[in-house]
Structure formats: structure tokens, C-alpha cells
Length: 342
Image 1 (tube, helix red, strand yellow):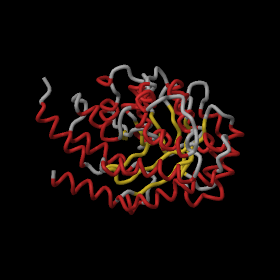
Image 2: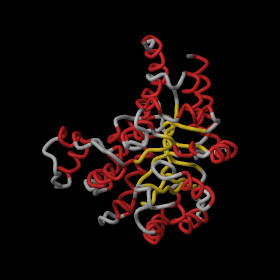
Image 3: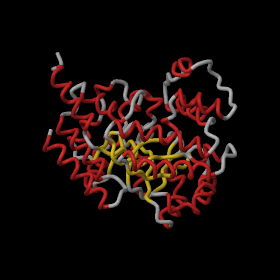
Image 4: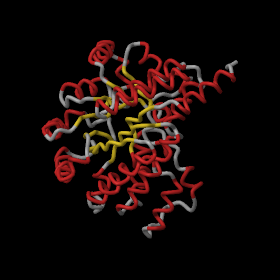
């Protein structure tokens, strides 16, 4: 039987542990209640009678099933105020989880293709990022390309972003992975690098280890989003460990999307044992059943990670961030103080 006292103590430890979140899609933090509120504000009729009906629809069998409802939900986002309210709702939840730094993805093409100006998106999100400082939270924004669309479309989206480069930290690559290898976006990632942006890409979630190699060798990414399937290739694991690349792993997402069939078999423990620089994140928390502390607890309550592992994961989230060296040093010192006092 699990030691309930030990689990309760570890829950309390995780709840107050300073940490960063490096894999969060802001559109995926749209809770049903806010979706209904924004729909009403913007005169949109949702195909659900009430919040409970919408929550019942969150029953996915794979990534594409999720993406279909994800894009439907994003349609309620129409104005700068909508994007501000969306982001602030997430920042308040993150701060409550003792997230001290967040690097959030946003999908401009999801919005600009509907006629929403890029300025509305970036102005709302960046204003919220500034206001998040009042919550003790530093925030960086990552412009993600939708990989099921063409590289030409990604170039068009990057061109929209160029007037706002001072508000962006990096670019990412998300949406349907299988059938859309990273190499498809080689030229646009090279251009983003020329513009001074950091690079990251979803790879090895549903796609094979070969996609991770492409992300590393063709896109030259700075960080791997997901990366679960790297464990199928010992040479790849050794390389990622040797290069100190960070993996932004999302346990509840992996389970909800059937990337892992049983959370008891989640790869985070193996990643840590093999020296991989793994982190724990919530991905699309409104859809996948929890924010970052819920993802930690999904593993601690199964006895998969220890107090020491939680500290390692928290440290990894800071050292793997795109934040300034000064901010990272400040947050690492905060973790060490917390560890010494708890």
C-alpha cells in the first residue's frame, strides 16, 4: 500500500516548489467557463448547451481528435482583450502552483487565418506578460508554426511577427506531428535564427525518433518539446544527454493522447536515470486534466519520482529556460533556499 503520509508530504512539497513551465500552449489553457464567457462577449454560439457538455467532449483517442476541438475552441478568441484575459487566467493558475517563470507558445496562424490581426494576439499576450510580474512571474513568448500547414504559410506568419521581434523570444513547431517531419520547415527555422530567435520543436511525441534527429540536425533546435520516443534509440539518448538538451515533457497530455497508455509506465523516471535534462509541464491543461503541479502529482502519487527527482526537475526547468542568466541564477537560488528550508 502507498504510504499516504509520505504522499501527502510530497504533495505539499511540490505545491510550494519554485519552478518554471516551458511547454504551455496558451490556447490550450482556455477553460470551458472562459470559453463560454468569451463566446457570449463576441456573439458566438457554441455547439454545446452548457459547460458540462463541453467538458464531456474532452474525450480524445489521439492528437488529431484533440486538435479538432482545440481549434474550435480557439474561435472564441477575437479581440486583444480576449487574448489578455486568456493569458491572465493562466498566469494566475501558474502563480498559484508556484511557477515563477513561464515560456508560453501561441499559434498565430490559428487566429490570423480567421481574420484576427496579429497585433491583437501579440498585444493582448504581451500586455498580460507584463502584468504577470505583479504575480511574481516572468514570461517569455514563443511564436509557434502549425506543421500541418505549408512552410510558405509559416514564412508568412513569421513576416507578420517581424515588427514585434522585441516581444518574442523564439519560435516553435506544433500541431499534427505524424506526416509532417521537421525538415519540412528547415528554411523558415533558419530565417528565425537569423532574426535572433531561439528555436524549439515538438518532436518524438507521436512521431518517430527520426523526427528528433531532423529537429536537431536540420532545424538546429535549442530545446526538444516532448521527446518521449528518444528512448527508443540509445544513441539518440546518449547524444541528447551529452549535449545537455532540455526535453519539455507533459505527463497528463501523454496519457490523455494515448502517447503512454498507463501513467505507471511514463518515461520521466527513465529519462532522469539516463541523464536526460527532462522537465515537467502541462501542455494544454484545460483539455488534459491539470496544470503543472497536477502533472508532478500524477507521478509522485504513483511513486515514480521522489523529492530529489522533483528538485532535479525544477532545476532543469530553470536551466533549460530561455530566460536571462541573471533571472536563471535568481530562480535557482530560490529553489536552493526552498530545498534547504524544506
